[in-house]
Image (cartoon, rainbow, N blue to C red; front, side, top):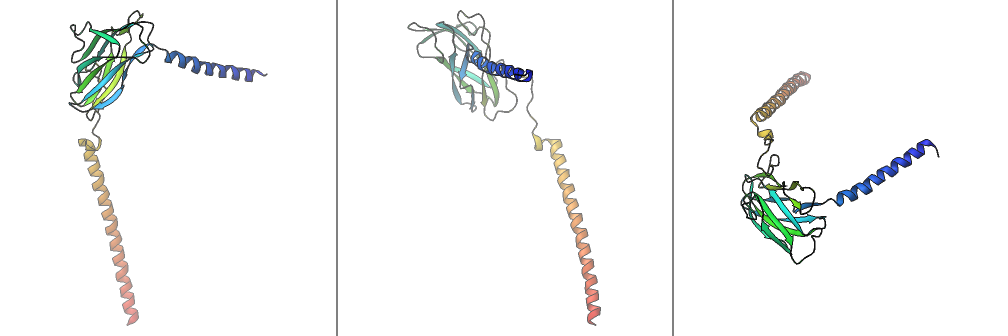
Length: 229
């Protein structure tokens, strides 16, 4: 077997191994997820979002800390999942939720550990204003006994027509709303001038063409008349 074939086979094994073992490692990552992770609701409308235990370690308890941007949506309720017992956690003044946060400490009732896909609880969000906002897991969100917190974007929710960049759980964003395109003042003027110029060119072309046709028609009529006389 020549050197090229050996290198080709080694590279193939490395690629296959990366996809197999890389995918397995990613699938086994311990975290929390939200269901649904994306949804659209109206201003004044509500959406129930489940908090799901995702590949939990061998533990029967967890702490959940997440936030939503109150400029776009507000949390109006929290409900325990089946076989879970929850208490209000730090950050919400002893309550399970506030308008912008969920703060719970939970344990599995009746013994046993958390299982993959188990619903820890659910919270309800209500639309306040049009836009796109993130529900973020923040510091203090973890499985009890785990070495680190699990943080990051849990879900992205559109209220009303949406538009603009997603707003984080703290209610801030560094991006602006998109341009209104053809209805922007400058663009509208540009399109208007383009249409007027195009119409003028068409008119001028047709006018010159009409003159030429009339001229040739008059000449033909003159010769036809003289021929008949």
